[in-house]
Every structure is written in C-alpha cells, then in structure tokens.
Length: 145
Image (cartoon, rainbow, N blue to C red; front, side, top):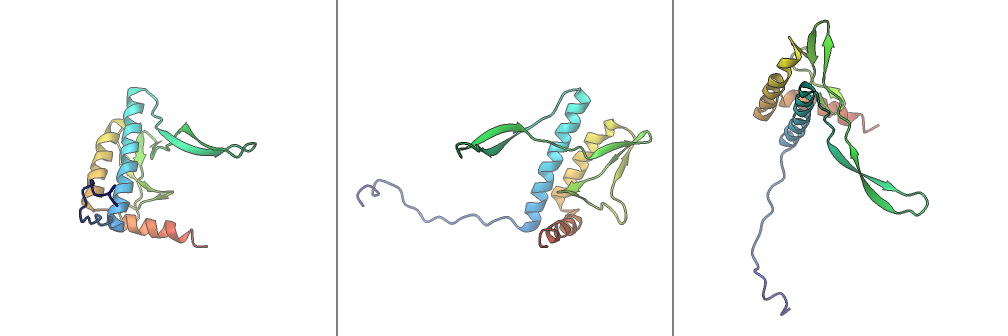
C-alpha cells in the first residue's frame, strides 16, 4: 500500500455518454467532412485517399498484424444532364431531405462545397434529426433478420 501513497487520489465522475441523436449527428458530420475533402481534392485535380488500418491474420503462422490501406470513399454527387445532383447518405441509405425528395440539384460542381457546408450546418443544428433517425431505424431493422 505504501507505493500508492505518493499518488494523488480524487473523486472522479465519468462524463455522460452522448445521446443517440447527437451520436448520429456526429457520425454524419464526419462523413460530410470526408465528402468536402473529396470535393476539394477533385476541384484541385488531386487524389484524396485517407488511410485506415486493417487487421490481417497470416494463414500460415496465425499472427495478426495491422496494415495501413487506403479508405474507399464513394462520392455522393453525380452529373445529370448538365447539372449536378447531390444526395446525402447515412450508411448505405439515402436520406430523404424533403417529402419525396432525396437529392439536391446544383448548377455546377463549383456549388458543391458551399452546399455540403450548408448541409453540415443543418445537421449540427439538428434540422435533419428526424430524417437521420428514420434512416437509422431502417438500417438497424435490416440487421435483425
């Protein structure tokens, strides 16, 4: 016990965990950040490939090790007859932004970055919480089969 007497002991309380709505907002904001970086890279003519770590088990020795690989990011926008359409995804599902509308039409690729920034602000403000929750529930129901 004498080894512990030199340490400062305190009463500590763990910070409360985020609410599910806040967790979904944070998750979508991080994906929006990735899309914004991808749009910036494409406008500058460079490749955007963030890194991720993948754990691989060697079949012969059974040894596990981490490999650094490029993370694949699918862009959320596409060209549609001279215009650019942008959809917002939560996981594999597209969020319905307005009743019956699942994409935003932009005049050009130059409007992409300001639009993504505006969507991120709306997500942070909680304006899309009901849509995100609906898509999240739909995604979650697919795992319970």
